Image (cartoon, rainbow, N blue to C red):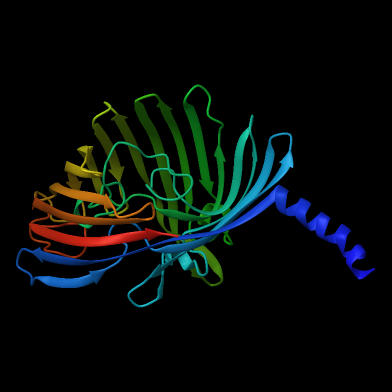
Length: 357
């Protein structure tokens, strides 16, 4: 009798599991890096997230019928060399890389809410950027090197259109990049709009992003504006063409930053299949103005060049050696080495591997 009573319960459970699914996934990457900036010591270190940030995540989807589904994505970053949390900017804790709930219709597109990477970040589920072989990794040669862009934002509302004849529209707004508990005009807001085309051998995108914020202080219990509203803008354009034997790429970015930087950056790169793996090669040049440094010396420029070879040991494991160089002159030449930006004559060599699970 107990077995018979259990049958309807088991049948119902089977029906639910057929209509919904939850997946555990992740990436772990680790390697060794040698780096030598000019006028600084050579360093050797165990380096994770040199290309792909180590992470684990849970994603789920439930089919509601009539082409409509609901899902979520929770993704946390970590440093495998010591087990510490990564991607913890703006107070993100358990799921610092992505924390999103979404609803999607095949004809209308997807609406999502939560913490996510920006449209032009080169990261996450809603990235639209194209046109560079080393988009958001590989240290000195990465596209974001020396040009701070928008990465992840909290309190985001995202719309991604369905693919229509190869075109996809993306819109993103953050009600508060770090928090949204102040008056609306006091929070930092992000706006992003992207248009991507992918059909046949061509892939291209144009992304516009902006942030505005004002600085306030509390005086006698009242918030008083200390500085006028400031804004920063980013324009990204990318183009790729798969010739069948290799893929040349071109990308351009214009950035204005809070620190007074206004700059243009151009990049040429390529993916070249070879011997079961692929070479990635790239060169980029940036020029502009940095108003935060001495007048008359505020013209800046920056260049970078590098190559990597990615060889799959299996469907889930890739080994990758890399060598790259970056330098800056004029306005930035006296700043020395601080991080991957503002480099004055530095090189990196790396060999590592990543594994998907």
